[in-house]
Length: 124
Image (cartoon, rainbow, N blue to C red; front, side, top):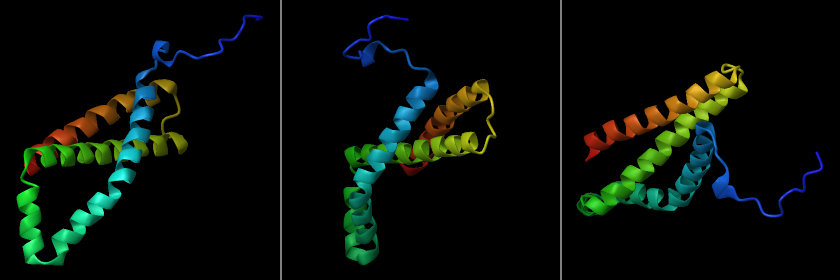
């Protein structure tokens, strides 16, 4: 019990469970969505302003790099949404055991990546 505590915690040596990575990705995807919000609002504004700005926007969004960026934002939204539903289920005690919560974290990753893949193929 009298072991000296480390002064510096080596985060790279800690083995997180999958639910820990889902939690970190939930926070990162939320931050990414928050930072991308001005850009998304600008794109939405340009799509509604006039037919000229809409056609200009569609030409610019046809570039593969921009498509990959939008695919990343789509993943961020879908992951954040699915993980948020998981946290809501945990808060409402619909996932009362640790085993169910860990299984739900696997489902969050599977569903968000599958939806991203399906919707990405449809959009591309």
